[in-house]
Length: 308
Image 1 (cartoon, rainbow, N blue to C red):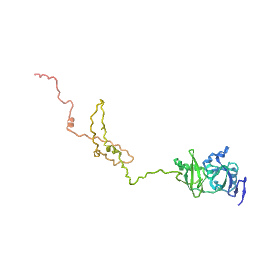
Image 2: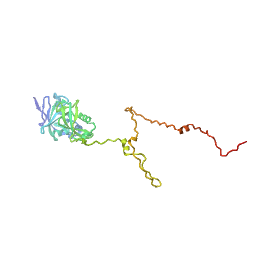
Image 3: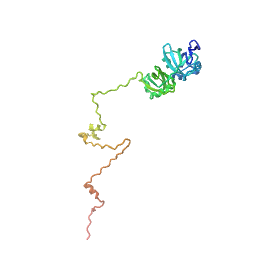
Image 4: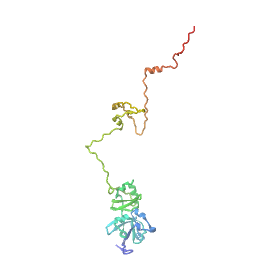
C-alpha cells in the first residue's frame, strides 16, 4: 500500500482511500477569536484544520465523513463527525465530554482515521443522574440533542444540554454494531434506570392482617346517632334551663332510603322534582268547602220595638 508523510514529524500517514493522521487536541474553549464555536460542546463533532479537507477531497471516501478517534496511550477510542475545517494546522478541537472519554489532556495526541459505519437501528442510554427523570419528555429532548451528533459508540458517556443544565448519558447498547451512524436514520431509543436511582418502597399488606372495613360516608351520622337541633340552649336572662334527656339515636330501619334510578345513563343529567303529596280530606275540609261568605244572620245590639 502506498503511503507518504505529511506536515510535521508528529503528523502520521495518509493512506490511499483512507485518511489517518495525528493531531494535538484541545477543548473547544481554547478556540478563541473569530473562530469561536462554543456550540461544539453540545454535540459530537470536532473541528479540524483546512489541510484535512484538502486531503479528504483527494481520497475516495464515503460521505458523510465519519472518523475514529484513538488515544494510543490509554487504548481508548470513540467516533465522531466533523463540523468545520477552521482549526490551526496540526491541531483539532474536541468537545470536553469526548476528551474525558478518551482520557486526553490539553495538547495530547489523538489518532484520527476515516471510517464507514452502519446506520443505527437501536440504541439504549443510561442517565448518570436521577435528575434526568425531572424532564417531562426525555425521548423528545434526547432526539433533539442527537441532531448535533453524527455517530454513537457503545460505552461512551455523552453530554446533552437542556434548560442550561448538562445531563450525561452512557451509551449502553447500539445496533447493529458497537459504533453506528445516526445521520438520517430511524432509530428506536430505550432508557435504562438512572445511575443511583432507587425505586420508592411499597408497603405490602400481609395476608394475616385484616383489611380495614370501608365505611359509607352517608352512614356516618347515623352511626353516631346524630340528630339536628338536639343540643342544650342558653337563656338570655342567665337562668338555667332544665336538662332534658337526649333523644334516643335513630334506628337504621327508621331511615327511608330512596329508590335508585335504574334508567340512569352516563353523560345525562336528570333533575328530579318531588311532587307534593295531596292532603287527605277530612270533615273539617268538607265544612270549609261549603262555607259561603256573608251568608249568616245578622245581630243587633239594640232590640227594636215591634210596630203594631
